[in-house]
Length: 337
Image 1 (tube, rainbow, N blue to C red):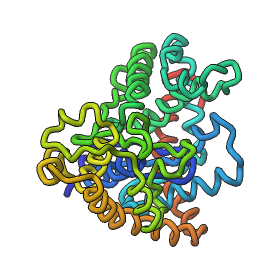
Image 2: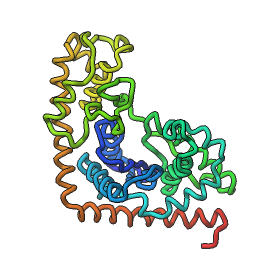
Image 3: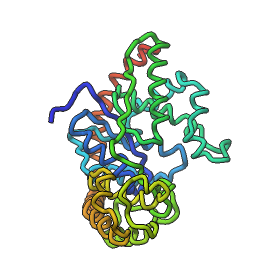
Image 4: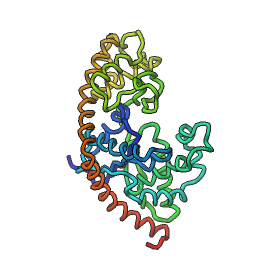
């Protein structure tokens, strides 16, 4: 399949360790498909990670584990540029320029800051407040045209679009920055907690039974699905009948996503079944997909120097593009290069 060389995809994943099924189905699986048809740049966003304090040694280990997970899931560092954000200084440099382009009112509307900072906003880092500007810099440094996003990132992409348009207008450089378009997965529903179908699957939830980690063993996956919250009703024929059954809907969505089926098709196949029987099928497909990924992650992590070399190779490719673009940006702003 020939790539469209005019289209550039950028996306990043925070190296917070222990990536789970929600990360795979919500992002990484889609990354693998996109690299077949577009020029893709994938980043381990370690600068974003330090908006809250990280243990330095743990951050290094998590960055390498995130890279190992990328590769184990099928990302090809020969086809896509894969690197860690902090190794390319252009991200931080452009973020500062965007701090001066972006408006305070725009930052105040960012709902994720309010959610992450909680009630103690005064104690949150300045980095957490302005990190949407860094996200815009990540994307626009490479003049990315497309960004795969979930529901929780749509607002930040809108900000990136606003910043691109304002920069182009303020500095009278029409179309210098492309206005990036969202890439939203079709037939995909957010992966929710196995313990509460109204909450997103997250590694920050206390119970490990709330999620399927990509490093889980076969026994762990089977046990977690067996204990996953459902209800006593059988699988219905129509999706409308799942409206008030969030846990049941979540398990059916997971099965549909992992098998590349529409939920309606899954319901057609499973109608009338008890969840005890359905869980066995769900466990089987999860084991067949997740366990090979977990084994590959473990194997890759055992060769730290190989992972570091991959990041260095990706970093050199990213620097070549970013340095060229940043030189032009500085000229536009009026800096002496």
